[in-house]
Each structure stands twice: as structure tokens, then as C-alpha cells.
Length: 214
Ligand code: E4P
Image (cartoon, rainbow, N blue to C red; front, side, top):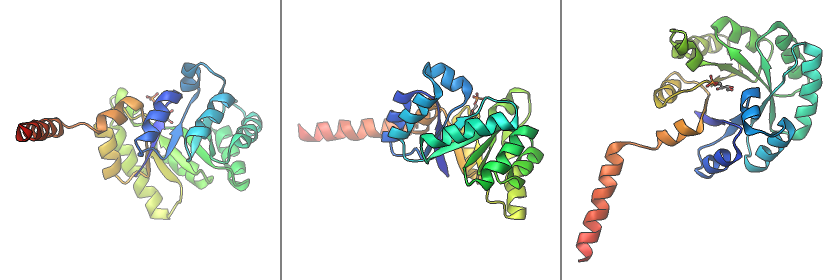
């Protein structure tokens, strides 16, 4: 499974990329606003750090506006992936960008049918938001399993990008359900390294090593 980091924080991206586990980056308008710089500057800076797909989201609500934004964003770097909302206009833009050979990530996917529509229109990625489904009392991970079955039934090449990941169990479940990618916040990426027995074991090895030297 590929790991993307879900952030607009350049320090977080640099740190996680150095760990060697990051294959790409996802941003959204909220993350760009949090970063406090304009989207073009942010995406350019990310492309100087990470050699992999970088999702940049459009903010227009009509297909024409989305496409104008998409063509400008795509000029920033060949790794830019255009993030489009799961709306009718988003799907019109998705179909056109697919014809133009520009990569897309259809976001705000909350049902298997929405994922199916995005795949039909040639989306490169679909982003089911598992955490936000959990927030309203549904089981977000069940959606990943449904989309996996549907895409496999028909051989769609669209990649499943598990998004709105909130904790380590979401990451493990994404991998068990054969999600192609999980986009993970920095805090959760850090938590993935830890296990209490690793720490206890390492402390014991170091203590034994020090004692043996005496
Ligand atoms: C990813 O592409 C999404 O923008 C992101 O995972 C949303 O996560 P949130 O529900 O924690 O805001």
C-alpha cells in the first residue's frame, strides 16, 4: 500500500519524507488555509520536496471554472493531481481531464456508487473519507471494502485512496482491505512506528550492552 501524507505543513512533509515511507501528498482547501500561504506557492514547495503525486484541489463549483483551475495547477509540476469534488460538475471536469491525460483525485466520496461514477469517468484516484463516516455513526472502513469489490469486479484502474484517516487502526484496516493508498496525517504516521514492546526491548538491549562493557 502506498502512503501519502495529508497535510500542507512543509516541515511535516520534509520530516515524514525523510523517513522513506511517503509516496505522495494530499492537500485540500482547509489544509492550504492552515498552511497560511497561497496554493501555488505551497504546491511548488511540496514538489521540491516530494517526488510523487501531489493532490491540489480546485475551489470552483462549475466545470468550466474547475477546468481553468486544473490546467493552471497542472502547469506547476508533472506530479500534480487535480482534486475534484464528487459533484456533477466535478465529474464533467474529471472526464475531460482524463481525456487530457491529467491525473485526478475525486474527493468527498461517501458511497460506493459515487466511487463507481468517478471510476467510470476515468478518475485516477477516488478518496473515500472513512473518518467522517465514522463521525456520523457509520463504519467508514466498510466503504473501502465495497469499493474494492466493485473496482475488482469490473477491472477499473482507478486507485482507492483511503482518506480522513484518524488513527492507526484505520491504516491497518485500509491495508487489509487492499486499499491502494492511504493518506495519513503526520500525527498518525508517527504513531505507526510505536509499539510498547519495541521500546521495552530496545531499553533492555541498551542496558545489557552498557552492563557488558563494565
Ligand atoms: C484527503 O484528501 C482529505 O482532504 C482528508 O483526508 C480529509 O480529512 P479530515 O476528514 O480529517 O478533514
